[in-house]
Length: 295
Image (cartoon, rainbow, N blue to C red):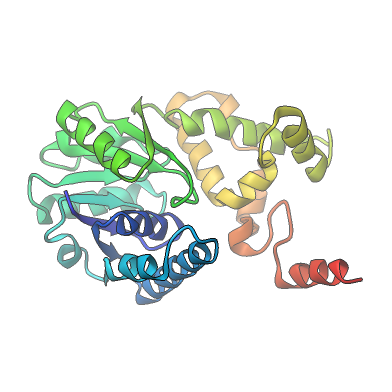
């Protein structure tokens, strides 16, 4: 399998496209927005530049990776010759079902249809596909070019053959695939999101401040990043969405998003992507930090 289509040029989509292209795959990166595609390619180029500067790859490797990626704004055109499609659109069930229905009508019946969803049921996604045995979850971690884990999620009907192919495909990218079954949150987010939510609850209830909570988890539990900083990095809207999927799936109040998280998302405080979450990522704050370094 050498022809890959990736749907969605956002953070996860461009990272997935970058990774496949770096390992010699021909990648069609698809997004309905030309601006998103341009931003995605700019991100990929910038990430490759950093790898060149750190001498992890050569300038020729960078050019070869970029040359392996072709952009499309039309899904049928972009997936026409794909042997594997990886959907990495926004974490919205209705949108994903619409995309997979379109893929079912457009792709060859042998094409592997994978979703990078972090919480939405693979079985539900596969329900709109005529042969659901070829639908599988391929949950990459962010940042995709660096993180080793790929969570491989089997839907109720996913075949052994497709699962094995997807595991092998992940290994060809020098990733470590881990198989999981299709239950809300799978493994990664079923464990991670309640921890993040509890950290938010602790701040909300006045147990400790943001930096204090993160410091306890970093120094006391050897986490490389505190849970509130990690939530900002993931996106508070994404965290909220995943918790809602888990809450609705399990009908258990322990998965209900903290009211503070709900309010922050409603107010547009989404973390790094919006410039502010539990921490301030605005340009003025960055300038202030630079000024402090030279004062």
